[in-house]
Image (tube, rainbow, N blue to C red):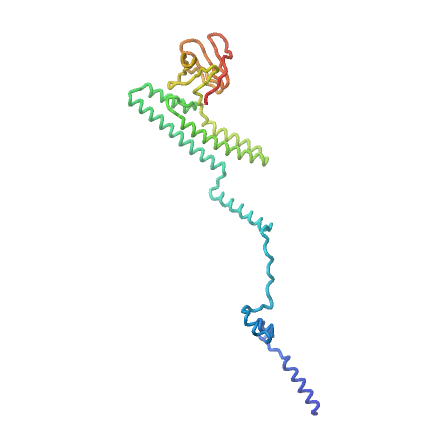
Length: 290
């Protein structure tokens, strides 16, 4: 080989050396090297690179866009979470608002009835201790009448009992009304009618007859007495007429004088009178006292 040829071959070999690539593994893959700020910026920026501790990544994941405060998808997720929590809470006891109200109603009624029965027993025990057998017998008859006909007694004070029953009935009525309104709004008329029937059946036994005092036009007052007789007081307390209760209907109570053949019927807005064989006639306006 001539000198000129050897020179060309040597130059070609020198140029090949920098182009030689080192294989990282047997598959010829080149290992990935992370470049620092120093190597990226070059030797002229060595001092600046020393101030930067965090290495510069050649391949970084794109930064996600910031979430909006009122993002619709995020709000929907929050609503779904709230509804799921509400369902979970309902599932803990498995009872609707109406069912809870029904249980509270039953508990309140049971407690009120028990307290009234205890009051009857206490008054009867006092009458027996005093040797008043007539009063004890009257208490028994009024307790039996109360259980059978739901007529509040006159031999004992029932103010507390009546207040408790009003609270209980009002609460359960509101619960039923709310449930019935929801059914009608959803178009479920059959369920609404069924709930109305259930409400009546549950409440009606605890709507007691508390008609015990009546105010008649002109100032006269009819008031039931402890022995279930009635006393009419008129002329500013100067005149007294005793009656006994002859009939008790849903729309009136009929009284008959003890000494004459006069009868009166006390309606919610008027008093009718019957004297002997004469027919009933309108007598005075009136109303039941609250």
